[in-house]
Image 1 (cartoon, rainbow, N blue to C red):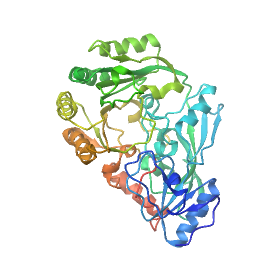
Image 2: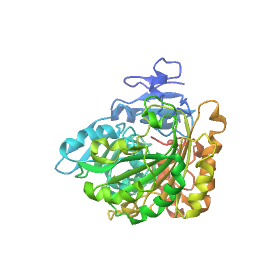
Image 3: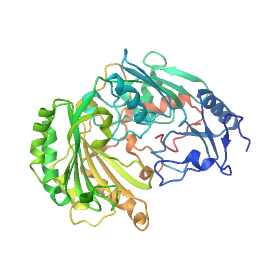
Length: 446
């Protein structure tokens, strides 16, 4: 196979730098593209796409590698991780972000101006993949999804043309990108809205896992009282005996309540009081916090690891659904699961912006269910079934899924995440801009 002439290099599996160039954050699957191009600028992306088109090669893209669905075999992988510039305009409350930048870089650039992005639960995730997949985070109930913040996208389409798209310039492609996730091209730059948020009342509370029946029962009713300024999730965690964890949490089964409130500290404490009264906390970390510390709410892992995850959106969460979750992940259950999580949705997530059409999935969902298991021996053989058992247990109340939570269980397929009209729209736009299927959905950008 001939290779394109690009700077700095087009790498094949025999090159010493290949492994580092393709290394993902989620290491369950090891990417094995035929060729990897590490783009140092938009011109490298254009050249790689034009070369692949001339050679009849499939193209995939990776920024941080948080969300691989296949091993990318047979494709040309364009890595955008070096396209990580961030420019903040305080006057317009916007940021222009390179295709490979992570949220932590946007937060670092925005917070000195008293501004904040609508990011996810971990700032280690890539901005583009988050926003193109919809994007749900601790402030989404107040401000909408990550896709709702996007003002402009610069993308290299299958014809090797770099395009600026927005509500006016190629609006159908722009609408498809907002939630359609993948298969339209390679994003080199994205412009997003920022918000005047400097602090919040939030954090996490770790309760004994044995109290999970009482906590989940109280939580499902408690979140129904929220205004849009308040959000919460709750997770059943089986923590490893990690020396980095506080001693009471090492190797423990716990219930982790996550909380974020944009109002005053007194308001936040009053809202949280009913849950604090349900059980005695092991560790209570909810307090006033600067926005830059938002990762502390979920305390997601920051080191690469192999996992198997499965997920679904839920239309409702009746008491029977809580019982079903406890039956597969609650106290006394032998399971390799690290986490079984429920996130409360609604609020601004459910309201489509007035600007026009988009492809954000799950706006009508009330909750999101997520299950995660490690793929380490000896539990790797049973991890997929354990994650699937959580989703299957709550299947009667499931309404669909979110693109950003489709892991290896999706098998490289997006599945029925959108309604029929949106699926038809996405298919039509993909065929218009990529008629030969160059950007095959053999993986989701992460």
